[in-house]
Amino acid sequence: MDWTAFLLSLRLAAWTLAILLPVGLLVARALAHARFAGKPLVEAALALPLVLPPTVLGYYLLVAFGGESALGRLYETAFGRPLVFTFQGLLLASVIFNLPFAIQPIQRAFEAIAPEIREAAECCGLKPWRIFWRIELPLAWPGLVTALVLSFAHTLGEFGVVLMVGGSIPGETRTVAIAIYDRVQGFDHAAAGMMSVVLLAISLGAISIAYFGGARGGGRDV
Image (tube, rainbow, N blue to C red; front, side, top):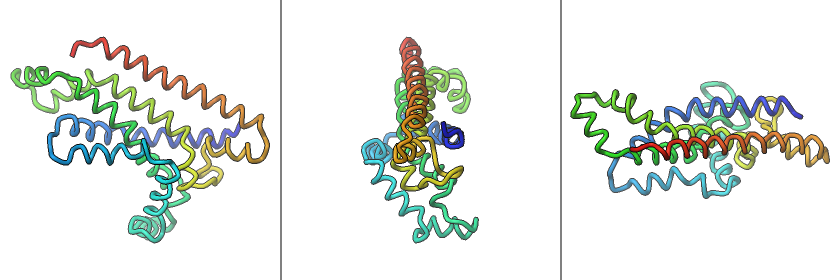
């Protein structure tokens, strides 16, 4: 078992969730309530990581983060090192390829809240932030749980984007998924099998939590 790679994956997943939680809440709530002509196009763009092959998405992110891009040059000027093949670049890529996993479940949860509930709260004199905090967020909690566990599991298991943007640098970008690939390439099937079992167990547990949360939320009268 490559514990360095496993701990790096957990660190990547934790930082990804820390960034995606506020971003996902803000974007999902805005999309749930907004009505504008380009909304389907925005939703389609945010859903692209679901349908693009990971290597294609990884290639575009590699180009976007590379030294020839404005973002890559700006980062290198500010920090004195390239953005690609670093943990920071991997984290930014992780946030991007997890956007639909974080936004869509929360958006659907907000959309499921009956408008009459918000209208009643407004009639009672509650301010918008209190309506969000005291009413909307508790009702949308199952969607939030689903978003968190799916993003966590997807981060641990992502391979193509991680390989393209981060490579396989021990302690920096070699996640557990990359470590499994390296072990198979080195014919160390015992280690690859052990790490695969761990990922399988974590993924099954995460999906179970998501379904359990969805089942609990489905019983709410909203």
